[in-house]
Image (cartoon, rainbow, N blue to C red):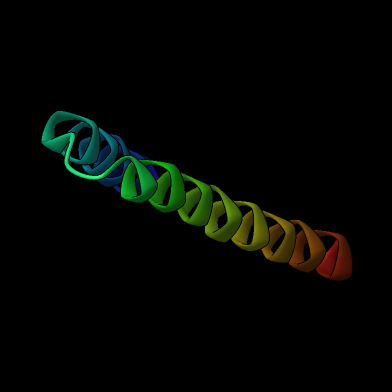
Length: 51
């Protein structure tokens, strides 16, 4: 999990450093947050299911 967090942080730095199109800078982090949120909910559901 720490490695994936590091990759996410590097991706954010890369996209922010790029500073290309404002639309991309808005869409990419939102998509990343959505994926992270869904995966977190899935993991949470699995923990609740098996505990």
